[in-house]
Length: 338
Picture 1 (cartoon, helix red, strand yellow):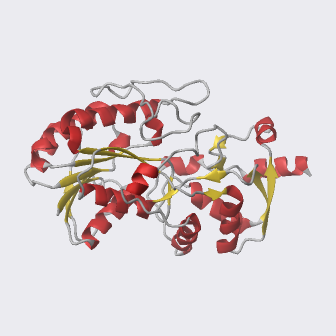
Picture 2: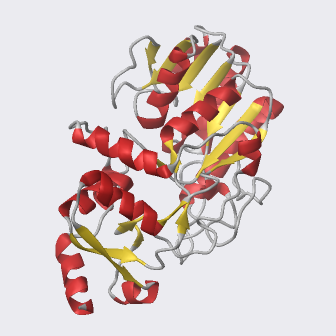
Picture 3: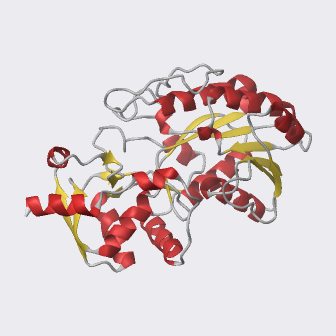
């Protein structure tokens, strides 16, 4: 099996490249060479996917049985269209890493893989779309929907779309789980979003990578929601963070309205917390039927702490700084609730 990975040097792309090599496959990676290091054993090709000449040069190194595109989130639909068009003759199958944000109803409505997608042209530039007054839909969602359309127009039934919600695990560059782990380690009273019984559905990066590789070698088409089918309660999630870090913390569960009164931002200041009804109601049964297997989220928490404790660092990314409430703000809120 010969595959091409668009990206391939950090987090999901790195796991996909490593997993493919472990299966004995021949792996080519294509990226700009700016973030992370090439995985030992791959054939690295450095270039810009927005450059027709670079893509043409890449295509001459084929053919490949499949491409797995992990880097499309950084590019507008027209650039995804360019990549798919130039590479079509050299690639048998396209596995596209997308997002649940492509759905018209996200995060307000429960979703299946048949839910309506946002409408975005395949040749749209980066200005297409809008962000709603309540934070949804998003320009990001429109852009990713347009990227899917671009691939679908070129590859048709030879295209597969994987739509994760939140991906966690060792190597995470966004900083959601690392923030909770570091906060748990610090101990003391911990501001936590009630209800503690709310279930969340993050999926482990290693499980997404394995499923993407299975799809690259498969023959199915269409979209798959890639979310944890069982999930975990916020109480168990935070409890595991405390357990693995040895933190002597005590969660203070605060109702959403009260958090809002104190100006606590959902999704960022308290990572993974969002009150919209559909954000953690994404049905992944089609993916499970197709072979998606998700390890317990407690294992993801443990392994991510082991990675952090080994003094590993993710690739620098501006989103890391967006996550987590400032200690001074948290302390002030907790003092007001005493």
